[in-house]
Image 1: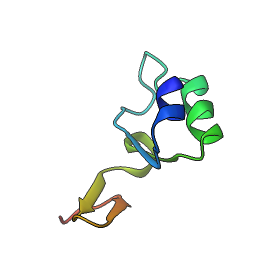
Image 2: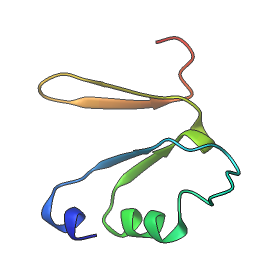
Image 3: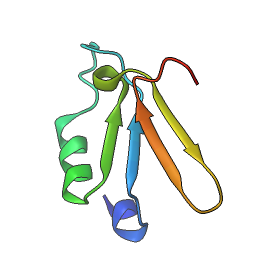
Length: 67
């Protein structure tokens, strides 16, 4: 959480299998990201996550089948 306070984090990508035995991502992690206003993309909910960027901006797309 301290890291989120020190940095300007706007987006998180969480690569995780659905119904994994570890219970990831943990609810407190998701709550912390939400409290800091971080947009969160999860592979267990949205499928593939594609992040494209250049020197001035980035975009995030979920469920991308053709990159």
